[in-house]
Image 1 (cartoon, each protein chain N blue to C red):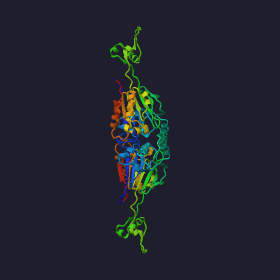
Image 2: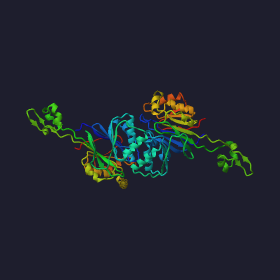
Image 3: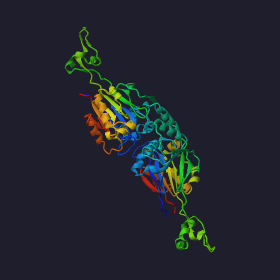
Image 4: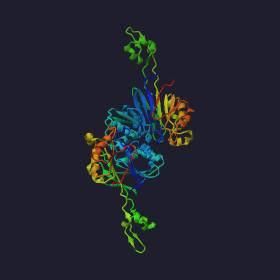
Length: 308
Length: 308
């Protein structure tokens, strides 16, 4: 159905302590071959290189919160973009203190970036749109964590209406763009064919939601309704529910409950505590509540597909 | 001669741009099984893990300057030490702005370290002693770079005097510590054996100097005289001497010239520009000026040996 890519690459799936071959959180979102980065733990620039991604193509970076495992790779990436001759602008979205942190470190290193960088302050506020371009709109989700923390909801831009194959011959070449944009077809003699006779609705726009780090937070459900792919953190098993509550993280079962209540298409789990050698134990707890559930892994590429 | 280890492990040998399997600068110095870290580029905690080092044993971290490739791994390491339950104190030595950078990021992440951390401000000043413990004394070297930058000179503490094997029988067990400390041996009847008859001088104390990043700086020579192992940056070949001058880095030949003029025991090269696929070209230029010259590599362990 969709010809244009919409994927997420999970570059790191570990929690605060790097271990067991897991890296700290970072995700590359590809919408129609335009690149966006969510979070940027230490070593992200290397993970991007391993994944074969030209990071100069990233135009927007979204930082969920200022725990080190979600942003300590940002300065290195900003610096490498500079050293490799970047000239195109970069937008960084994150908590208010992020600008001070970046500016202080640029100043201390005597660096004057050769490309324009804009740092935009976020605050946990459900539904506020923070970015829009021809491919996607990004809005915020208010997560519940020990420091201010936002999730991000990516909604693909709606494509054009699709010409009905059997009516193609009725639409002159020079009128096709207008008809796909929704106009009726009007002939010189005044005859009019309504647009709905000639076209089908656009391919449904796809959506991806990113929720990490967060405690179990049912108020998110209203904003996640019908999302095609939900990434939700799943730091602990149910046996560790107390620890999850104390540290404002989620169990895999809680992630699945959010997915079930929001009726999402698919649930992608990540942010696994280093205590779990394999994340299978987390998956097995989640699928009992929400079957369409998968584990993220280092370098995994997950397509965002419309629900049937 | 020496029973106690004195080694340096080069964890990263790249310059500003990570590439070609090289990591940014970090070195672990082991003096008598006590650990010190010099510089801490992004990913250092992972490199320490790969090298099998328990980083909780590091008591002092020395940061040469605030270019990202020399310190962006520090926050992650400080944070992992905290998460892994460290209680013992940590000393960080570096440029004055470092304290503000650390404090700001700890504050933004809501972290209250459970171990005492002391951040000490350095300034490029040749010979100033900044740390001394029973194993080693560390003093500063004034490097010449685009931002304030210090090198570090590690001088092993002098060991005890050594009992002459042939005179062992003359020294009662309970007097040996005193004699090794330099005292004459005095018997109840007043008879005295001078210490020099019973002992030999201590094993010569070894020394290691770290010079990165720096332009060719002959004023260092006086402070590097007779050092056993000198690590000196060698970012460029002689063909790139103009670039070295412009960026305040050194060519391999310039590093060798410093080594030759200071009469060091051995020269260890590093901080190779990503343009060189192999660092052999740098080595071949250096050995023409100073033959006792070796290349550092990721994870390489280099013993510091007294010169004959």
